[in-house]
Length: 258
Image (cartoon, rainbow, N blue to C red; front, side, top):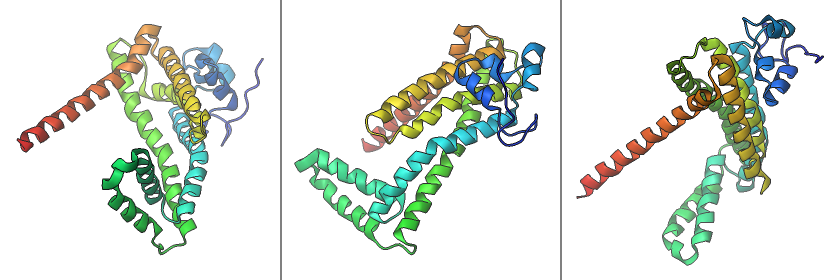
């Protein structure tokens, strides 16, 4: 028999995070045990409650913060070495890398390289380490907010598709369940690591996809095929819209150039 601990921030059903046991169950794809249901006493009673949408929100924000911790430290070090804010440091390094790759064919990049490096090297009003830290902190704080927006917008697309397939699920229960799919994305914190970073990101994405499909399948009562389509079709739709927009812009620019 597993022991289910108290919520991470507060005990009882009013907490902002699920229990460690629920997190463990979700990572092992035991989504029925992690999520709980309101209509299945064999599952809901041991948990004390099913996962709430508020707990899902807290989980997405926390995983975003944890995933961004190591990149935050790396970004801070990168910016401190240049002695300026992170965006300028990244831009300076990016243009420098492009110039090194292109070698003798990068003469047209030289003015831009010198300009960016000059701006990046200017003494800011605040100490360089402070400007670097604040800009890196801004990037870090923005990550969980971006994940939260993706959780809501992408989840809404999945919910609409699953409803078309005949799903019966409430908005709150759906979002509470799909929040567990963001847990594996903590591995993206290893992104800056050479060699290991890309592998960790790939594993995180695949693991997250499996958890997402399993969560959708559990709360919508759809079969595996329709659950997979519910998760994939919104991405395909957004890609098609993006391609159409790029094509429309390209055609407009070509007509203006004629």
